[in-house]
Amino acid sequence: MQSRAAIELQFRRIRIGLFVLWAIFASVIVAWSVRSAEDRALSEVMQKAGETLAVQTEILSGVLDKYRLMPPLLSRQSSIRTLFVRDAEGNAQNVGARRMAENIAGMSAAMDVAFFFPDGELLANARGSFARSDEGLPSLIEVARQGRLGRAALSNDQNERTYAFSSGVRRDGKFVGVVVVYVDFYRVEAAWALSARRIFVTDKAGTVFLANDPDWRLQHISDVRPADGGGRYLINGRFEQRLDLLRHLPLLEWDLHVLADPAPVESARLNAAAIATLACLLAGLVMLTVLRRYEMGIIRARRDRAIALRLERVVRDRTRALSITNRSLSQEVEVRRQAEARLHKTQNELIQTAKLAALGQMSAALSHEYNQPLAAIRTYADNALKFLERGATSEVSGNLTRINGLVERMAELSRTLLSFSRKPGATIGPVPLGTVIEEALLLARPRARAAGISTIHVGDAVSGFHVRGGRIRLGQVFVNLINNAVDSLSGQPDAVVDIDAGRAGDRVIVTVRDNGRGIDPDQLPKVFDPFFTTKAVGEGIGIGLSIADNIIRDFGGTITVGNHPDGGACFTISLQAANADDEVVGGEPGLASSHIVV
Image (tube, rainbow, N blue to C red; front, side, top):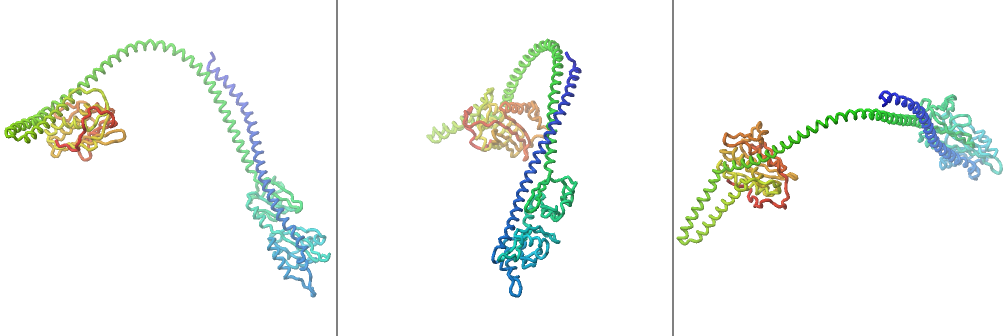
């Protein structure tokens, strides 16, 4: 079997070879990506600049063609020819000629329209200063004299520029004057100013005649583009690299230039280089990671085989020990199962014992409950005999009705005592909360009366709820809680026990509250502990609340205790709500009254 050091050496050599191949491959990929991105970006920049160049060429040609046709058309009009006729005194029609020039200039939006005599004398013009200077005028007149269209690019000291077209006026075949139209380039340059690219026109002498950069106008091209600048132009006070797209205008002997910013090309180069480099690095990392995982897999497989051999030996030894331990644990589990069964049995017997103990404590008061109706029955019976002797049958019927009511009251109390004393079943189902509390009050009433408790208040909402539980065990919970409240209020004037209920989602919340002294905060956590009591010796063993807690937990609920802000202890029970339409265990009627005096 190969050692780990030999495996690592072998893979180290493989990694070196792969790194060399990766470096060569990455260089080729990066170079190709940069070149492709540069070509695409340059093509896009040149295409957009070319579109701008084509549009501006058409605009400039359109403007010049418009004014190029004006002088020949004007020179053929008879109204223009009559302007060059002098009167007998040799005076020209200056006023009429000026009005004519202004009308033509206004309608055509030309910079100026002028009329000249063959010797260069100005007959009239509409406006502007070019007509009053000799700039280019001789050549314009001379070409017009030859019957051709004269043209010239003109500028003055105020950096004003125009392009002049001239045409000769002939009357009876004789050359009598010249019409000159001066073109205004303001709108052209204003449109160029909206473009982010530099647009300019150079004449055959290299002078920048038109430009959307005011600083370039009438400058020589060498002033904005150094001869050895390598495509650099003066942009905003500094020389920057630009791509120059040029179109020659042969009729005007002008060159129209559009400068494109090469920054997108450089940005595309850098982005392509960065993306290609990152992609190659990622591919290299993936390749390295795969190789490393393969290497670690081989090393791990070798290590796992060695560990497996050791584990087989350990497993054999452990299996032998575990077999012995399992036999021991099986015996221990059986012992614990039996102990748990005995514990449940003991708990059930303890609950029953607590109930019988509670019945024993209530026996004195219950005997008083029976003695009162028995004495009343005897009195009503004796009176009935006397009424019979006197023949007062209506009075006898009334006494017998009262005797029947007292007997029914004693029977109801007997049924409740028998139900409370027998061992409960484990069945859990929907039970009426009002009936359970009514039965608990029947058992607790004598003890409350003996303690001097005048009022136990039951909320109206109690009789409207059904909860999941066992009727007898739930009744035991409320008997314990009411008895605890009675014990804490014993001898207190105006003592009141309040029982109420409400709905919270799928839970029914029942509260049992008294207006006594409450529970010491230090003792609150211990209230539900078995055999914890604050009563005197012989008055209680401290298992009632512990039993109540266990019963409520069996029903899937909770019971808590605290002191009410208005005074006294308050027990809160949360039980699962049941459907009122479900079958009810023990269908006795619920409480009809919300206030019971005991």
